[in-house]
Amino acid sequence: QVQLVESGGGLVQPGGSLRLSCVAHDFTLDYYAIAWFRQAPGKQRELVARISSGGSTNYADSVKGRFTSSRDNAKNTVYLQMSSLKPEDTAVYYCNGERRLFGKTYNYWGQGTQVTVSS
Image 1: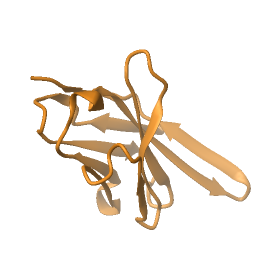
Image 2: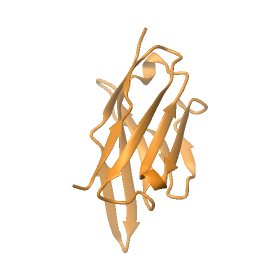
Image 3: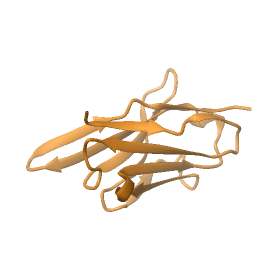
């Protein structure tokens, strides 16, 4: 089944770190741009980070300098390393993969992983 699966979420204290993983099943991530979104209770889903198929990255101002996205195409996996976590980073984190090929857009979402930053 074609899908993205996130993992690595959990409970962490303020100032701590977590690494999220986004693994592709039944398709190859090589040509996909991967975006990380998050959604906190009562808030809209927001874009956190994006990594292109070539490895270029962009980050929301709120996470710049604290979050880093990387990809390991050999493992068909994209990572989001999160450091200096704050309570306001608490949310469900989703990865999204997209590519365009011959005029058609392929887009997949993961199921999300909960990140809770609390003392």
